[in-house]
Image (cartoon, rainbow, N blue to C red; front, side, top):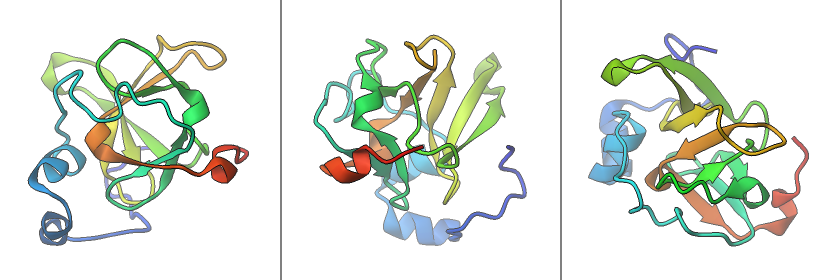
Amino acid sequence: MKSENKKFELERSEEEWKKILSPDEYRVLRMKGTEYPFTGEYNLFFEDGVYKCRACGNHLFNSDTKFKSHCGWPSFYDVAKSDAIIEVLDTSHNMIRTEVICAKCGSHLGHVFEDGPEPTGLRYCINSIAITFAKDSVNNKESK
């Protein structure tokens, strides 16, 4: 699904986002930036729980789908729920990639690649600064 002209459940003006998010969070989540590889707080973090959108709290990923990808960013092979994210064609930087955005607020999370482990073969490569972690074993086992 494309994000252009899409209405999100949580709509805010860019001025509101700038007040809510830190400058680095705003740069990644709203301006489609990225953090440097191997610098994010969740790159080598493997506790049980759930990962949520830092901008709106939408439940995005479960810890049981997180894996060591050695790419420098937190990586997951599946989303928590099929409607948690939206995938968008990204042709920036002379590349063809698939951008991952939050389905609730439209914030940029990272990209998805087809070089992940089974059972999906996908690698959701997500900026640490775009997500928060919560220890929550009940929701971690939620059905998709």
